[in-house]
Length: 97
Image (cartoon, rainbow, N blue to C red; front, side, top):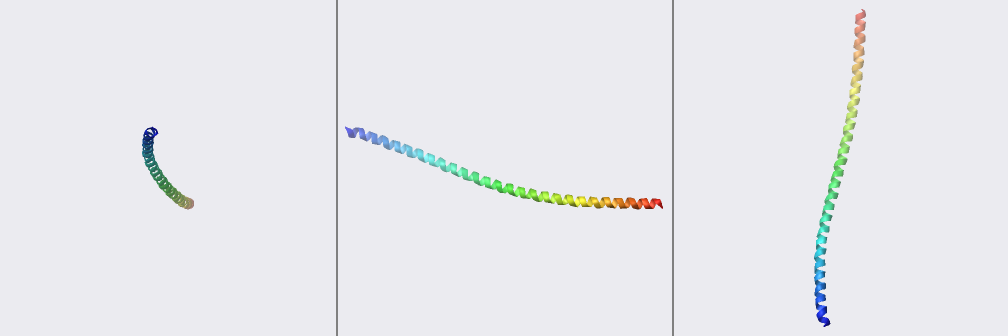
């Protein structure tokens, strides 16, 4: 009698174990998929960080070039202004004579 009750319980236990193993596999596959997606996200973030660093470096270089161009333009303007004053003084002298 005990054997008749024991065998169905063992079968039920084995079925439950098999079901939990299959569920565990699905969970493992889902975990591996999530890990893969997380690694892809980390790689994308690292790539974006490198691109941002390169863009910042390019922006700094552009700013430096713009500042140098402004200094050159300012110097050219000062030269032009001085030449204009010289020409005006020369014209004034010529008109006085």
